[in-house]
Image 1 (cartoon, rainbow, N blue to C red):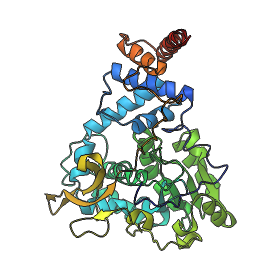
Image 2: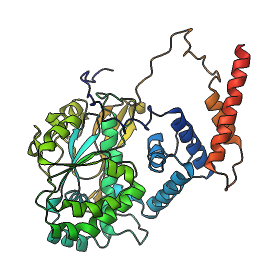
Image 3: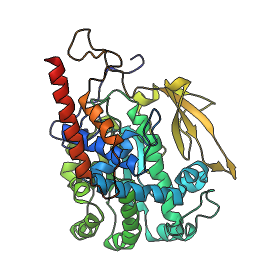
Image 4: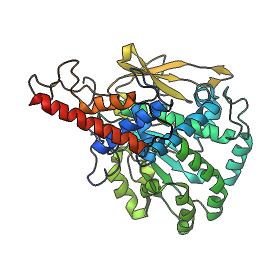
Length: 425
């Protein structure tokens, strides 16, 4: 594909137990069956619509299914609750209309995208907790007790203004940073969309009192993020842990599920550089942690040159502006446009910043004529897909379990396979 660098990001052996396994393009047969069953289950419940333009993309649905250990009923409950929460708090309106300065004020208190990626192409974030001193947090929380005048979004009356601002940052992760990194084909799993983030969390110069004062602040944010933005965190590297951190870790690990805890690495000073370099190229590691990247906390992203060379800037922009932004298809779907949104001085903005050629999903090479992979146009030769359509046509009762759906799929698939074998014979 023209314009795409042939230098590919290489992953390191032994670190791919998680991503890309369990993600699109890397599903086992059982996982693929579970995923198709989940989509059918959601559609029968009225929570999802399929078709040429589905209501939700596959990678989003997979995040919920992975989070609930591939159990469709459990994933449906979390997905349904999240959709209800999003509608009650008008997350789309919040992101489109949030005051840019309010957004930036929140951004400076949470993990910052460095503008770089790890070796797998996942966006790299930095979080220095020492900046969240009690005075700063108290002033921020007082200022954000109510979401009034920050956006045009309504609320459920329960989620605080502070947390709603935080979730605008999660929207930026899922609607801006991850889609941008997905369109970069210089990575091993270019057929797999990016739905995660890698985080360096610097806890140096933080006292026990400060950790204690931040406990409620961090716990509420972690709990809601886990509930409504599942499977968006991958590796978390904790750096600069003080001698008492074992006590703090006892609190923190209870905020996360066991799988997330297994992705958290607490590094000693001697382990920082070699561990980070095994996951991140030195040019993308901030200098403070032994790398080559000029990046300070609070700074705007220092954009990866590989990303920058693929962008076509517009309207006088040469960098991404402050505030929220997202990507939308243009030019018949051949490119994505970055659109800056939010409000400035009470006026909503919607400004096209740049475009990028679409690289995901990459085109599949055509199968050679006569090969076992060649399928005549319109031929119904995929037993699994016929099985899925068979299950879709069944009237599912409310008390029907995901296991029963899975069993129906297996039975129909077996039946279709037997028919195909008989025809071939």
